[in-house]
Amino acid sequence: MPEAIDMSREAPTDVDALLQANLERVFNERDDARRADAVAALYTEAPVMYEPAGPVHGRGDIHRIAGELLQRFGPRFRFAAQGMAAGHHGMATLLWTGGEPGQPPVVQGFDTAEIVDGRIARLWVLIEPPGR
Image (tube, rainbow, N blue to C red; front, side, top):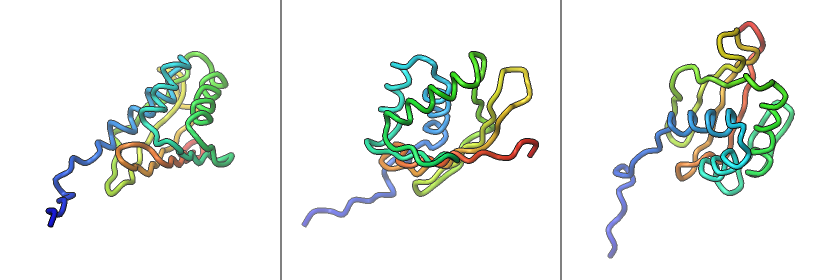
């Protein structure tokens, strides 16, 4: 009879590294090819991102939305993590702000991700009201 696998010995996903990479390599990346490579590396095959405007399905649309955000906000706009991501049991959250370096943020919120096999399967992008 095969020996049972002890799941407690498997290395847990570094949720901070994953969500920080998503912010930097996907949502701050202006080069389309590098952003596409990052989405392929960081997301499952059929991810869903839930934005305030509605769900975004698939790697291609996540890639497109990230590029459109950067174009809309201008060439100096960047997202910046606020601390480290926290999570366990396949769920993690990272607080962030967005704006031009050295200026007050124009947007802030947090990403909450469902993580499957070390990749983002579902991502909820939650925007906080200004001034909070």
